Image 1 (cartoon, rainbow, N blue to C red):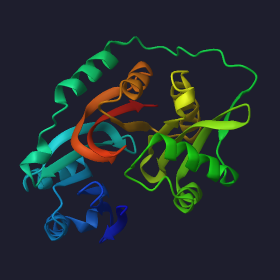
Image 2 (cartoon, rainbow, N blue to C red):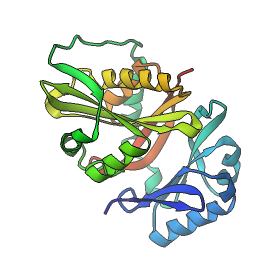
Image 3 (cartoon, rainbow, N blue to C red):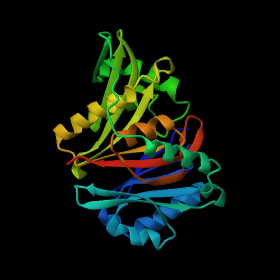
Amino acid sequence: MLDSITEIGKSIVHHGKSNNRIYLMSLDDSDLPNIIKKLDDLANENRYTKIIAKVPKYASELFEGSGYVNEAIIPEFYNGKEDAYFLSKYLDENRITDTFENYCNQVYEWAKSKDMGQDMKPFGESFSCRVVTDKDLDDMVLVYQETFKTYPFPIHDKSYLLKTMNENVIYFGIWIKGELVAVSSIEAAKGYSNAELTDFATLKAYRGQGYASYLLAEMEKTMKELGFHTAYTIARAKSYGMNITFSKKGYQYAGRLINNTNISGNIESMNVWYKILR
C-alpha cells in the first residue's frame, strides 16, 4: 500500500507503512507546539519506526526538546532567509543503524573528490530535451517502472503524475529517436522560493551518457528564470551517479537522513545536497 499525504492542522504530512515513517513536509506556524505530540500519537498508533520533520530553524529547538536529532541543514531555504532543519526521531533502535554506512561514506568522499564542471557529451541530432506534458504520461510511467521497484511517492500512477503536473511540479524529459529515455522534475515551493530536484530516472540501456547532468542543467536554467533562490535534492546515499552529478554541479552537502526512504525495494539512507541560485 502506498503512503498517503494528509494534513495535521494546516501542516502537510506524508506517512505510511511503505516507508514506515512520518515525514512532516511543511510546517504551519499555527500548529506549534501541539503538532509534536500529534506526530507522536500518529507514529504510536501505526507503529512507525521514524518521524522526520523539515522545519524552519526557529522551530528546531521545540523538536529537539522532544527527542529529535538534526540530520541535515539547508541554509537560506525559506525565501532566502531562514534555514531548514531536517530533524529525525527514531522509535526503533534498529532504524538508526545503517549497515551500509561505510559504503555510503565512500560514495560521498568519491563524489566530493570530483572536480566541478559540465562534462557535457556531444549529443546527436536524434537527441532532444523539453518539458514533459500530459501527452507523455504513458511513456513517463514506463521509465519509472523500469527504474524503481518502489518509490516514496506514486510516480507509477498516471493520475498522480498529472495531478502534480497541474499543481507544482515541472517534469523534464530526454528523447532519443522519439523515445523517452530519461526524466526528472522540479518540485516547486514558490511560496518559499525553493525547489526540490527529484524523480531522476533513465532507462537502463541509456545510462552512463550524462543525461542526468544535462537534465539538472536544464532545470537550473528554468529555476533561475522563475526566480528561485534555493535548489536541493535528496539523493540515495548509495548512488555514485546521483551524488557525483550534484557534487560536480557545485551543490553542497547538507547531511544524511538515516534509513529514510523506501526506494527500489529497500529502505535506504539519503544524502541532502543544496545550491544557492542567487
